Each structure stands twice: as structure tokens, then as C-alpha cells.
Image 1: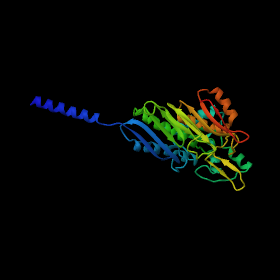
Image 2: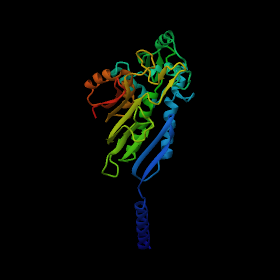
Image 3: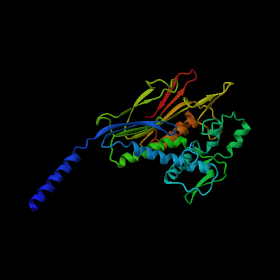
Length: 327
């Protein structure tokens, strides 16, 4: 009887092992909408569709730092509610913002939120044509030095300071997905949310991921402006070719607010693509800062930070497109 039991056990073990071996790995492409934009996530040689897991991650991020959700932690902070204990997501985004704010000498500043709203590019969509006096009035609430993290809560120097992490949150969302895939030992993926990208490994085990840069003059051109290879790096592109508005009198306002002046006017940069091995949140924030800096100040910054690579597109005086690239 004991021999029969051992045989049955051995057969059961073989069957279980065979079933495990039969689990086929495949490539997945997930598409959808999040953070007010679209995403496309491709990951290769995986055993499971992680759509539900990613939806849960996106929900957690939104509930923490989305200004478009009235009940999110950042919305509560912006309303002036006190003693809001923030989660790890908010804390990491805030600390990254502080670091890059300091590095860029204030050209990256999430406290321009009131001006973003006033110009019509935030959740309030006020679309006010601000006077110089109104801009000056709003500028007293701009400056990330006016906000600190103390005992797990955000403390503002003035209740009217308004935080807006939209210029770093998409990149951070990509980082969260990337960390999730790394934990699942997925070694090849391309994560794209609203044009920001994180690529790891190789496509088809031999070729790097191919990325098309948007033409800042012909944003609907599917052929793109330039094609680059990307592997084990993050890339973010910022530009004013999609988010802008023109008033009845012909004045153009762009979504990149200069935190030094409070103005929503174009610099001489049409687009800034930033590429680095660092987190996507970092390159997302740098791209925004460079658009506010303009071409020459960005070049000066890059001399001190050679680890950051860029493709900068700007217009010559005759309107022709020119490129400055370190990648």
C-alpha cells in the first residue's frame, strides 16, 4: 500500500510540474486613459495580464497627487485643510520637486498652480487675461520655499499657496509602473504616458525600443521629427505646441508658466526632450524647467549636468527649425 501511495504522489508531482511548465509567457500591450491623457504600456515575455494591478496603482497615485480629484490629498492641502498626513507617494513627489527646484534655481516650481488655473490650464479653467497687477499679486504665493514637509504633513507659509504636480506626476506614474514590473522580474518593457517614456531591455531580444519625437511645428505629423533608440532610460518631452490658447485679440498663452515672472508666454524653445538613466519623474520635471529657462540658460545648466541628455528644438529668426542635441 505504501508503494502505491508513493507512486500516486510521484505521479501527482509530475502532473503539477507539467502544469507549471505549460504556463505560456507572452507579450502584452495595454492601452487606456489616466492622468488626463492616454497611455500605452508594452511588456514582453510575461505570464500575466497586469491591467487590474496597474489600474489600482493609478488610482492610488490619483488619490494622492491629482488636482483634478476634489478628495485627493493634494486637493485637501490646496483647500487649506490642515494636518493632512500625506502618503509615501506625495512625500516622494514633493521631495523630488524640492531637489529639482533647487537644482534649476527655481525654474521648476509646482507652486505656480494658481497661475496655471488663472490662465485656464488647470482644473478650474478660469481663463483670465491677467493684468500685470494681478500677476504680481499671484506671485507672492509662488515659491516652493514657502512649503515644507513637517511631521508627515505639508505646511504652507500661506493658505493660498497652490501645489500642482502635473509637470512631474506623469513621469512619477511611469516610475511606479516600472518598479512594479521590476518586482515581477519583467526585463523588457516600454511604458508611455502622455508622451513621457521609460524603456527597459530590448525589443525582440535584439533591438532597442524606437521612439518618434513629435514635430513641434506639425504636432499631428505621425512621421515625427526625429527617431531615436531608447533602452534602460527615461525620456520626457515638454512643449507648448498642444496646450495653448489664443484670445480674441490674438494674444497667445501657453501652459508652461515661467515661475520667475508669472508669465504664460513662449520662450525661444519649441520643445525640450530630456533623456537620462534616472527616474522618469526627474526628466519630466527638467523638461518643464528647460521650457521656462529658454535655450541659453538650458545650455548653461547642461554644462554642469552632463549626465542629462537633451534634444532641444527651437525656431530660427526666419522660422526654420533648428536642433541642439547632446544625445
